[in-house]
Image (cartoon, rainbow, N blue to C red; front, side, top):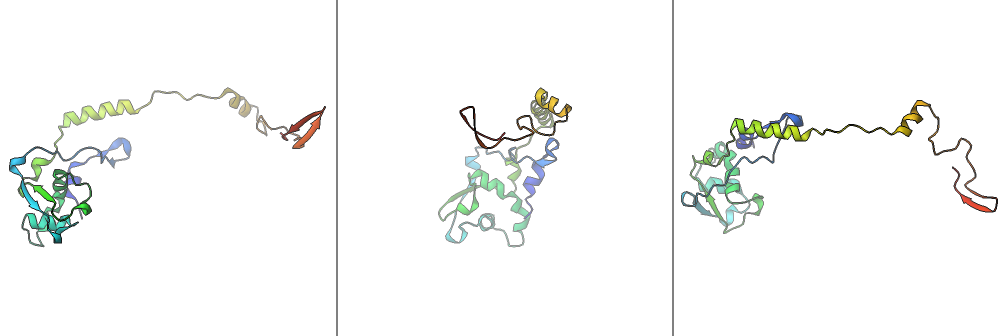
Length: 169
């Protein structure tokens, strides 16, 4: 299913290899209590947001595909995060068929540019890379073993001068 509403209102982020930012809100939830109709979910409609949508707007089976891109508005208005959780008796509030765009969040281009410029400034760290001087000397002198390993290893367990030692490095 092609969700038209998301394709139209979400934008890609050039700083993230053109990935779509799904955290940016695309739908607002206005308080239009008087203008919203209600529908009570029946037993045959449980877990089927597509059938609920068809029954609410009394659409024919061939007409449903035209409007399915607006299901996200219904889900947002009713605070439904998972359509599979819709049970019999649930009250669904819905707008008129042509009013879905009233619930879309419109961001002004100037406002969008300001937010992205601030984000770009904050996302670039101003740090320099620290270099380990000991590691630099080790690389410059072209040592064959790490500095903690001896060229001639010792026995793993030994007694030297009445001192018991463990470790062969």
